[in-house]
Image (cartoon, rainbow, N blue to C red; front, side, top):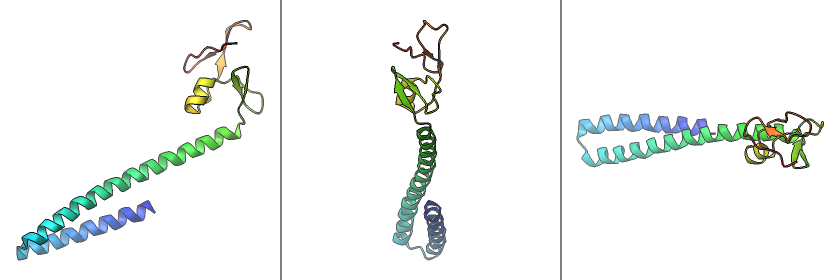
Length: 124
């Protein structure tokens, strides 16, 4: 749909340029001013349409990422996340704030877990 909007705006801009060239021959100042104003507004619409298209693409990627993550079935145990297969622990800070899966590790069994991405230390 956004592509059709962009194409329609491009067609209108082309038509306006053709009208402007015709009006230059006839010296219609008001027509020229109106065409110039419309051209500026259409340029703004074109920019807005491109921004919408880019935002839409980004949102689709985010939805895809979140669906993938939700399929992992993340659950919290002892303030740490584990997936449905028991893999983990994953960082609660990274998961809660960015929906990013970041594995936590520790140097020995009696040490707390540390996130390799954000350096969060488990309170366990």
